[in-house]
Image 1 (tube, helix red, strand yellow):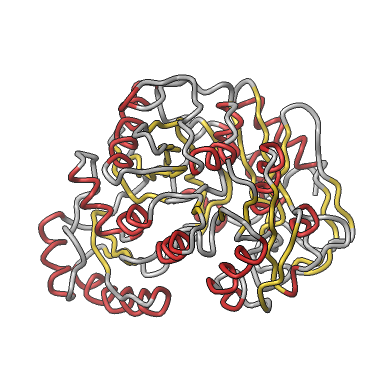
Image 2 (cartoon, helix red, strand yellow; image 1 turned 135 degrees about the vertical axis):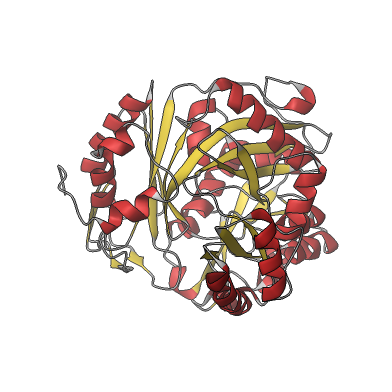
Length: 460
């Protein structure tokens, strides 16, 4: 096992990793920018190193500074968390070159699944269903038109090298596709330094369902069930839950086996997520793989009882998976225990989504049965404008979905954040909506719901 781990991140995920290390008896090193010197993850770690200015490019994305911090503190491993350099294959290689352990998958796995076109080809070779589309990047608008003519409209252009909705355009006919191609390639080039795009069939009302997978260095790969992630705004997740109301035990077995097959195709080691689009007829299609721990990993922890961050560390140290339901190549066949929901509490205006950085003057975190809060916020903390607006994650667990929803309402009403605006009122409105309460939604539902305007809800 490792002696000391450097956490190459900030905020709640850095604090989450430090907590896991403490339970494993491992010393920790926090890194921070100048604006984060008073952050809670810095206080919680055994040591801390300032690695640069507030701008991520000079600090949390500064590979040279991170490697130097690990070397001068005597760390023997680095955990990247999520975001920043978590899916940067070059960073992983450099750490390995200087004798540090990267707590994550191999650089080769990251590269294969980080390139969406290569990831799709890899999934297809493993007999994992993929959305009909181009076999790789489309070089010209004419090539895109030819593919669209073969698979039918509507179609979706997506950036090969990116995510988060950038470089993504929907076209419902030839005229729209011809216009969208140039815009998509330009946006992809600006956002990712790579203007390549590929084209696929556009699904009208799909769900976004992802499977948690885990692999070890001994060749074992399993899945730990699914997470429902369909409630999104501009392709950014707002709320996640597990299990999905749309996934039966039979469908879970099929999708889980496909997720394991996709991970096995790249000899995956560590925690990863296979993301699928689930169509209304029960068909599902591989979308992409995230080669890191996910923001929403706590809902899987709540319904399985497994600590995924501790498992990441153990696997990176060479230990076999500790999950007790071995089923070989087909993955873990488990029935989720109860229902869990995660609410992302962001420092944003709940109606306009404008960021609301500033000083938290009052903070009260909810508690009680089945309630968990992952946060690095505290009274008097200044939320800097330089990073994402996440204040914390409220996770609730109940014996069933109805109990989890009511527990979520109770906890949200007791989650008090003053000094900045937050998305708590948005979540309260969502929980009162009949469509949400009955699980009647898709990836398109939230955008339409928001367009209808604010609705009354109890509480703030």
